[in-house]
Length: 195
Picture 1 (cartoon, rainbow, N blue to C red):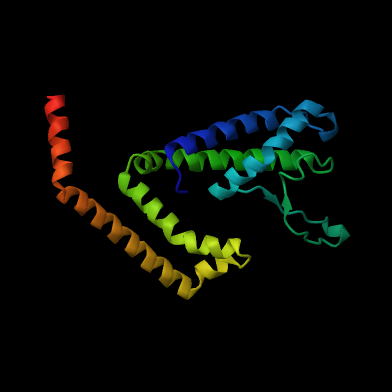
Picture 2 (picture 1 turned 180 degrees about the horizontal axis):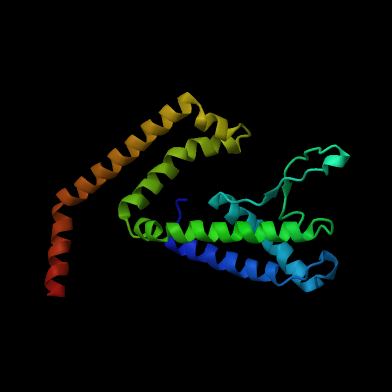
């Protein structure tokens, strides 16, 4: 996770609110009030993104009884099947467990997110990363597979070259500003006015 402390706290609040909603639902899916059901369904896309980013997406593995052959079914998305009457309690418990795990992951990342948020080098690196991925976004907008282009060997080399060029141009601009007499006059004026 490479998010700011503000985004992290927002995600923690969203998880807590969603957990409270899901935990308060009755034990049978058919008895969930329509207002609660609508509120939960509206929150699912955001919660799915948050859980996926934390690495705790709620998938369930369902297997037939051994008497019936014990077939193993493909993983089932517990968020999408939250109101399925056959497996409601299992889905709800799995979602709550994943929310608790994701909350723990985000709380563990809280000190590092504070450092990232207030570290100017991290912001510079984000800007350089964004700028170096811009050509691949343009490729994606043109209809090509941007992820494949960016993850290819040539794409990685291009991204490194663009990142180095971005850092070099930033440093050149910084040194040009620091070398400018006008800059130092402005700094001197600010120091005189502040002192």
